[in-house]
Amino acid sequence: MASNLPPPETDTDSLAGWMSHLIELRTRIVRAAVAVLVVFLMLFYWRNQIFGFFSAPMLANLPSGARMISTEVTSNFFVPIKFVLWVAFVIALPVVLYQLWAFIAPGLYAREKKLVVPVVTSSYVLFLIGTAFAYFLVFPTVFHFMAQITPMGVEMATDIDNYLSFGLTMFLAFGLAFEVPVVVVVLVKLGFVSVAQLKNIRPYMTVGAFAVSALVTPPDAVSMLLLAIPLVLLYEIGIFVARWVEPKSEVE
Image (cartoon, rainbow, N blue to C red):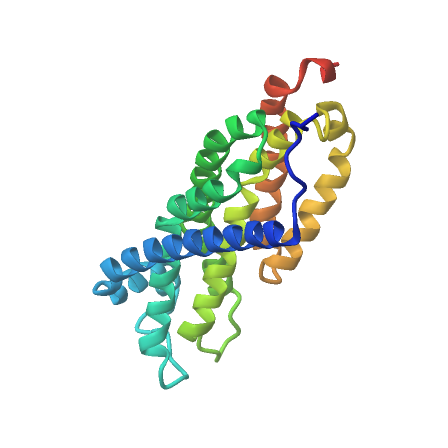
């Protein structure tokens, strides 16, 4: 009697499957890179103006007549390009995330696929809000504070390369910090944790928020508080929203 079972998978079939996945991954990476490159080329002409906007909070708090400095021969050229590349990546991030989703989608369950669009959209919006929070509130506050405590006889003149590193670190830190509600809601929705458990670990999360803030921000109380307090508030927002998406069996 003939069997209806499919033939067993051979090593050749397994290798072919892996190769097809690698080829698809390469295609997705290339498409994402092309999207970033296209945006980068569109912005390249205005690189100095874009960097000028980025450095405005620092320049506004320097003493009258003071300017930022460049200690490396090539910094004047490469630093604005690096920042424009960052901006291009952020603008093209929806395309990058879509390519990532298209690659992993075949392996997701139906309930996980339903989360993709709202999670990706809210994550992107919150990341932008986080970077805007850093630029419009944190930067002016921190730079003003630093200018006020500058010792007598010391000129506050920041190197543009160091300023770029500081700025991108702050953008990344605050952008990721504002993802906390999304992470909390997704974990509850998928059943990994319950709202009750999140409430129980609230004191530890508060301590963790201040510890993380102390690690990623400059060594001053102002910038640490400007990150720690939003982290705590965002965690509470995540808990509040998670109550509406928690599986019925988990509701208290």
